[in-house]
Image (cartoon, rainbow, N blue to C red; front, side, top):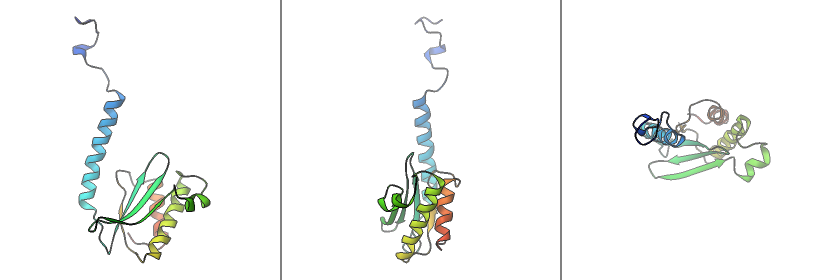
Length: 140
């Protein structure tokens, strides 16, 4: 036991606490996001399709980085989407969202995009959304 009554060596915790892990994950994701954004750029001819996944919803935006403008957006939060889909965060919901976004891209006469998955791995819901957009005839 130490002089201050604690059995910990030098007053340090033995294991990182939840807050430390959260901060570590956030800084790791910020580094990853910065590295991805250095490589992935959207133009007027080929805008960037960015996907964001929260715990409850999935959001997708088509962005022209040269203008700094969002051209199109779709999410599982919209009324148009919720009328068709049963859930908001399943693979089926992401497939439906990808199809909706693909139709909107065709209506806007955009046939090529650059896919930006953010910090998420290209797997599961992200991959399902991307495949659904491809099925609508949009090239990555």
